Image (cartoon, rainbow over all chains, first blue to last red; front, side):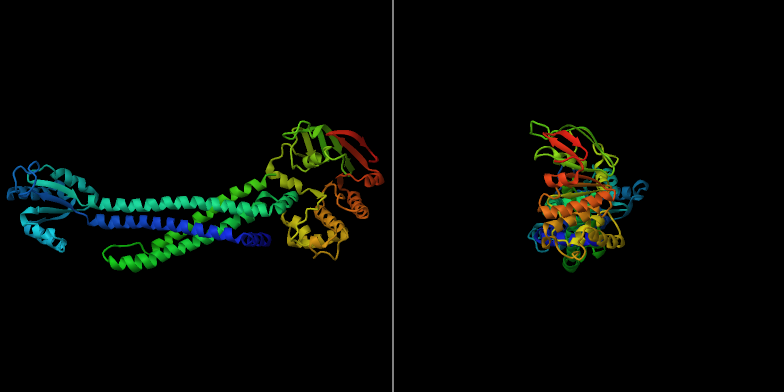
Length: 302
Length: 225
């Protein structure tokens, strides 16, 4: 044991610059991995948060609706009553948590509020904005039932699930995290190559010693252990740094900045970060053990 | 102890085999000189007995192991049962005399207690007591070879393979080393020694196996060079 520890120490000091580069490359690549997994967690969290609040909008026909959807023009009170009755019917009420009706005045008020600083607010008139039934479902995934029940019904211009807007945002975030994972995989690959080169150099500089070890009957395990541990130690240092970086990102950027400036969104917290750290360290240990094990193999051939 | 049957060793890219249908039997306790000019096949034969190489055809049995079929993970365990010395000593330059000897015990997992007992004993046996803390570079060639011998026999091996152990030493020092190897042999260790040294072979009157062009041309008990 004493022998193995002193061998690792010697190995690390022998090519300190290579070891530093292994540490840095694993550090950066695993930070990418960590950031990407945090982003995935964030997407998951936002999905549950926003899907929960997403509603289905049943837009009623207005004066300016296209004629193919609304041949009769502005939806009459009878048609609106029919939609309301259908929402309250036994078949649908099981899925509907609640719904409310938004008339032209309310729609106009909301629009003016949302587009307060936009020029379009000046040109819009009340009658251009649809009257809408906003339907909140017990389970947002059941939106299809509402869509299918009301599409094509007289007086209904369009049924729209708000989740379709959210999905666009999530697919952008998802693509970003996939890109981060792609970069991370590439960098992890180069980290593995770097580790095996480092170990190969280390073994080459000790090849005389290795020859003598083989001669006196040291087992392969005994010969390769210091080299494998040398790679593992370097990569583990890198992964611990990466874990620290991930926690710092969560603490100072996400919680310290994002959460302050966007108070209505829930963000990943330190608990999620702490979940990622052991994964990073485990990945580093496995990767470096495999890379250095393969690298040293050549020198073990008897 | 050693049984070599119809062994042929053909290296890639050379027309003539390094060993051509060689058969050799060595009994327990024997002392055998392998003699012959450079390129006669001595070293190839030594490498086969150490399982550093396998023959192209034929069989090699050493210490009861079939060295042709032995799985590679068992080779270290085979090597622990024999000792080896070389012309170039093969000591670790950054370790002291005692550490060099202890190294061969450490790598096979002997306890520190055993090592602390065995190393001074064997250093006394080879006449190096008092030099345990020197580095190899601070020793003469003869002393370095004594360290190598100490390392080879500290495990009490049944077989000692010596590949020109006196090749780098002056005649007087060679005699000291040979006296030591004879003593090791008298303690029951089988010795196989490849050598160029006519004087040593003539003086010791042991079994002599002469190789030429990869074939055994003489196998004589009590022979000379």
